[in-house]
Image 1 (tube, rainbow, N blue to C red):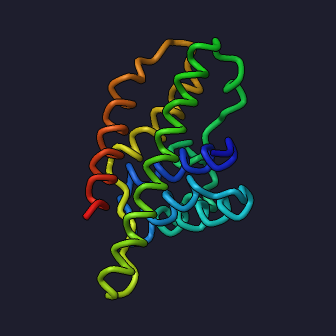
Image 2 (cartoon, one colour; image 1 turned 45 degrees about the horizontal axis):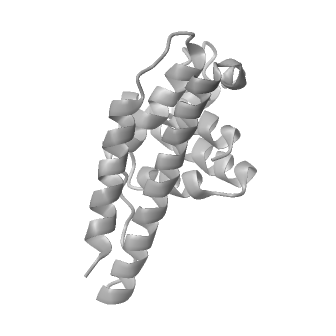
Length: 162
């Protein structure tokens, strides 16, 4: 996942934590995680964020809760921390891919129109956690989060098997 996309997703997660999601938020998040076009993905993320928190777009005194994540120190972290963050990002990508595949398969098999993508809460927690980890010099224990993501991926994959 491109860091520009992650940065924008961190801001969107802030908006979601304050105001909830729209019917499109999960789809925007999962499509952005898989996107190979950062500028387009960031634009769609920002559009969704300002639907959720419209006043934030023109706030004269931003609080920072919905600001894009500051990832300027991403590469300054020790190698072991960067590796763990990259593992979490890779898990997010695998989850988004598995979910997109299973929804596409369900749509074809059921011939009942498009199946909506629904992101589990762990996706939002993982994105938020990556944002916090990027601002802190403190080591984070990513293992519980990574395990939860991998378990969710396993559930998603098992659901798509006949």
